[in-house]
Length: 220
Image (cartoon, rainbow, N blue to C red; front, top):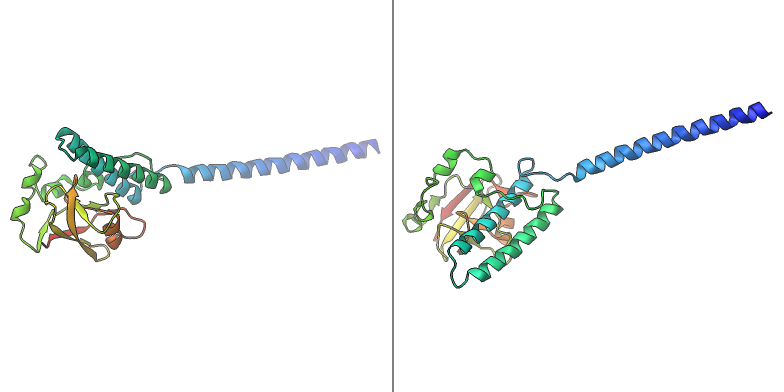
């Protein structure tokens, strides 16, 4: 009887160890899967992250410009864009992106060849020469090769630009879904056409924060 009890005890121990090993293995696999899913993606790995990184970079570049050549309204503009940057970082975290990753310049962020950037103007040319806003006729395509992203700003549909003055009307068409919006430039930014949240929602593809194939026209 003593031997039978010993054997029975050994079997029970073996079963418990086996069960523990399986449970431990399962927990390890689940933990590994969870960590992989939570690993933040870079702009190079995700179109969503690329768009957010570009938006962050555009706002940072705008702030740098305001600080290098300040005027009476610069402090207010900088405070507004810093709040926008904070919101973009929240979106980066929610989208599983690297928080704070920035891409300066829409062409560079989208991986466009250097020829695409020079299609509208040489990189060294002043913004007023790429092309001059006054020389673009109504209905003329402008900023050929530029990508379009969002500024993160709230409010009615509008745009900001480094090439067109406030009051200029731009039509932005997303060639990937043929959706378009016509908006008025209301402020300065670091790119040809930067749409605020409401305007971007009118032309975006679900889950994307960057329009790679955009047609931008001056319409007024």
